[in-house]
Length: 286
Image 1 (tube, rainbow, N blue to C red):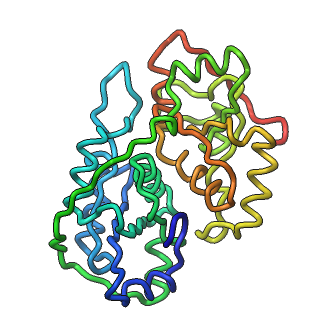
Image 2 (cartoon, one colour; image 1 turned 120 degrees about the vertical axis):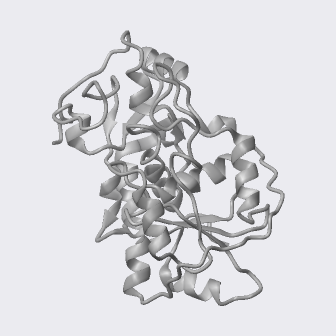
């Protein structure tokens, strides 16, 4: 059973085992071109893979002035969709993308939120699959529909109200997964206000990687131990919209650390309230 990462070699072996065929989910997406992922999937994908669109499948509707850019999907609707993709309680799910797991980690997290443990992200993703000369396909799969029964873990999510209280009382360790330039407020290509949440520390998800692959488990643990310290179990990850923050949570899980919670609304939800303070400036260590 794979619960965090899977290598290309391991996936190749798994796909040839008729007893334990996984459901593979293509999560390729581009924030700059929302149709790019579907177009890439149509051009070529891992054989048998279904396609999950970040905004249509892995997010709920945006409510202007209230939610962030990628709200969590309705659990029941997501469970129905997972069932239509052929996923049920005992299915091994493998998610991949072409951006080092930044979108695949969202599906990994969502599955865990619904109580599904047999899920992993393909380390190295689409690029690693191509380098290994893995088979490619344009065929659209016809999965046998299953019943996916969610067992929701609401404690995995940190609400805006909890973040407000945590900031006020100094009781949350907040970690920002965006690039340090966005954390510092030096650039902001997407959101209307630049900066970060008060008291948040910078923990860019890209630093979990080397050459497009996750760092070895020991290095991930050392990096996250140094950042989270003894308060790992009380830590909360956020990013721009609750997507790439999941990459840090996946890294913590792979490193064997307690799972941080996700501020699902993230920075884009925080700034919908003009009363919410933001801070700018780089971390002292930068």
